Image (cartoon, rainbow over the protein chains, first blue to last red):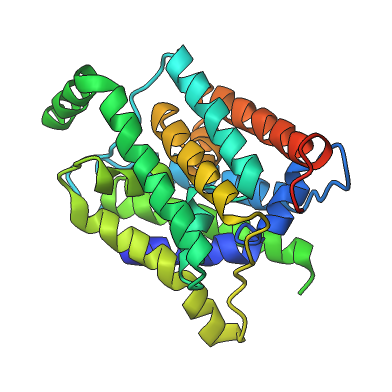
Length: 145
Length: 140
């Protein structure tokens, strides 16, 4: 099911135009020749998810697992906003966010591999920085579930 | 198919995938969280690997179905790709999500945290594109 979801997600991203950095950068280029096409990807995805989540949320548990893993974060703090700011900078620099980058390594271009390795390095680095308290919190959450 | 309809149907497919993942495995379709768990020591690797494999195979499947993979080419040189990858990795980890987890799933749940995060990364993304085109003028 995870494989099928990943496949569906990847096909959606690709059809939507997210795997073409030219389109993505054109979308972020609001002060130049703005290409609003990706508004429809986002809109279609948010609307479908909102309807589907509402329906799934009424169920007691998922079909193949013991419990729903809803995100628990409610606090907006500097780490979250700073992280989002850095992510946006990287996104605007090359035109790839994580999903489309992973889909694009399927195209076999070496520069995409470089991007994905750097991204994985960034995940690892940030996990080291954010320290043991965070890891402990996550472990406790896993136990709670 | 017009690019507009293509984009809309792409969005709907992304939404269906997110709903499928929640309905079956109870998980949120946040790519940075799912794939990030593979390098930060999550214990449940199997479903994460399967999901990432699905993403990587998507271009090939589209190519088999339509004759076109839909995968574009990088627009910046290797050093920029490396810097951008690092920023995306660090940023999505510290920020607890990316375009999918915050931008799609989070907004669909009307999460205040996700709306804020999405506004912030959209703004810095727009600002960066502006800087790259008008200030540093990298080969775009």
